[in-house]
Length: 232
Length: 232
DNA sequence: CCGACTATATATAAACA
DNA sequence: TTGTTTATATATAGTCG
Image (cartoon, rainbow over all chains, first blue to last red; front, side, top):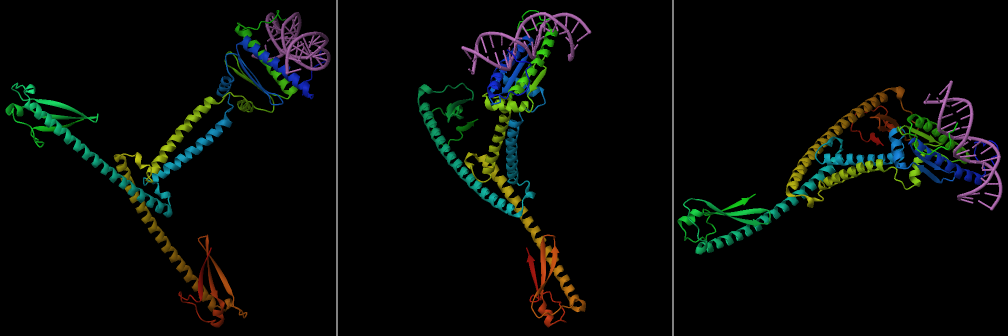
C-alpha cells in the first residue's frame, strides 16, 4: 500500500532507487508507446541510470538515428559538434598541407618567388638545375629508345614489303592469278594488319601489269610501282 | 469523466488527437522529470507530433547533445553516419588532391619520372629550364640587393665613425671633458645604438690621452687608438 | 532480479470555460 | 489554445514470495 504522498526527491536507498528506476522506466516507456499509437507521434527516449546503464525507447516504424537526424535538422542544437569539430580539424590540416604543396609547386614553376630568401632561392636553383638535368637525360634516353623502336619497325616493315613483293612475283607468274584488263586504270588494295592498331596498305598500279603483264616484280626500290601508305 | 477503458489506438478525430498529444506529452515529461529526480537518472526525450512538431525533454544539469554523444559511445548505432559520410567524402577528396600534388612535386624533384611519357617529359623539361632561369635571375638580383645594402651599411658606419672621431677631438680639446689620470689603464666605453638591434661600441685607450693629452684625433686609420666592436 | 498484491496517488478523457 | 472539473483508469511504493 502506498504510504502518503510520494515526495519527488532523490531516493537515498540504493536498492529502492534501483527498483523505482526500473518500474518507472517501464511506466514511462509504456506512456511513450501509448502516445505514439494514440497520437500518431514518434518518440525517442534515451536514458542513463545513476549507474550509467543505457535504456532507450523508440516508436515503432522509426529509428533513433532518424529521430536524432531530424532533431539536428529542426533544432538549432549542434548535436554533431564533437564529431564535427574533430573532422573539421582534420579537414583544416589537410587543406593547409594542400596549400603548402601548391605553394611549393608554384615556386617550382617560377611563381611566388618573392617570399623566398637568398638561401631558399639558392637551394631551389640547385634543385631546379639537378632536376632539369635528370629530365633532360631521361628525355634523351627516351628519344634513344624511340629511335631504336622505329628502326626495328622499319626493319619489320621492310621484311613485310619483301614478302609482299615476293608473293606478287609468284602471282604474276601464275596464270591462275592473271589480272583482267578492263581497259581502265584502277588500283587494287591489299590490306595488311600490323600490331593490331595500324594498318599498312600496299598499293600497286595495275596499269603496270596492263602494259607489262609479264614483267616480274623484283626490285624493292621500285617506288614508281609500289607505294607504301600508313593508314590511320 | 472517463468513458470506460481507454483503447490504445490512434485517435481519429484530429482535434482530440491534438489535445491528447498535448496532455499526455506533459504527463510523459512530468514522469520523466520525476524519474530524473527520484532515481538520479538522465533522460532525453525527443518527439515529433503527427504534424512534425518537435518537443523535447532533457533532465536538468545535462544537454541533449551530451546524451546523444553518450548514446553514440555506448550503443553500436552509428548515429553520425549521415554527417560522417559527407565529411569522409570531403576528406577522401582532399587526400587524393594531396597525393596528386605530392606526385607533381616529386616529378619536379626528378623522382617518379618513369610514369611520364615523352611529351610530358618534354614539357617538364621546358618548365624546369624556365624556372631554373627565373630562379637564377632572382638569385642574382637578390645578391645585387644584398651588396647594395652592405655598401650602404658600410657607408653609414663610416659616417658614424667620423662623427665619433669628431666628437672625441672636440672633447680632447675641451678642458671640461678633461680625463682624470688615476694611474691605472682602463677603458671607457661609449655606447652607440644603430638600427635598434645592434650596438656598436667605440672603445678608446685612455692612456693615449694620458701620454699625449693634447694630441688631436684625426686619423680614421688610427687602429691602434680606436677599436671598433660589434656587440651582439 | 522478477512478479504479485494493494492502498493510494496520479493521470487523463470528455466536456466545458 | 489552455485550464477547469470529474469519474474512472492507471501507476506505483512498499512489501512479500
